[in-house]
Length: 216
Image 1 (cartoon, rainbow, N blue to C red):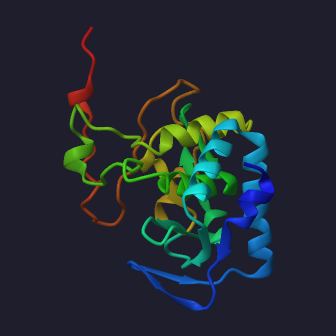
Image 2: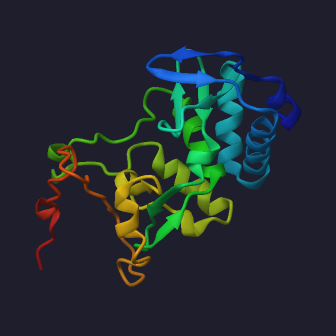
């Protein structure tokens, strides 16, 4: 497949409405240009990203739309729709595999949602602390490993995300605490990073990885 074939299989959402539980509206001309530019960079900069994009657009036309600021980005498989709020993505940070708080690349947010469209097996991990604290829990899910391969191929090795629940937005009160220190592991590589809830929320407040401890 060529880049021109990809463009022929991309449509833009018009008007405003709701898909599943998400609010969606149409992208501005500048936003359309930016997202297509990110896809072009991915398509020509990463062999794995090209595979993802080719597979997604060849199965069904992809619809691109504007996400609500609070949603940042989302996907809907039945309608083959992905939506992005570039302003919100610009405020997103996460802990990378070396324990450093880094800023998200919009290209990576775009390909993350495209990976979800590959099929129902491409999912993010649960948010429940009871699951995340378990010795068997998967902190990456099936999307993040593909995303990290693409990050490396794009030359964004600093954006190799440690685990899914390691992200925070500048809009989040936790960001001011986390950003006070950029490096949390003195450069040592880690497999898991989690950011607990702030202000009395319960989903992720119980952070206990003692069941994963390695003896000796």
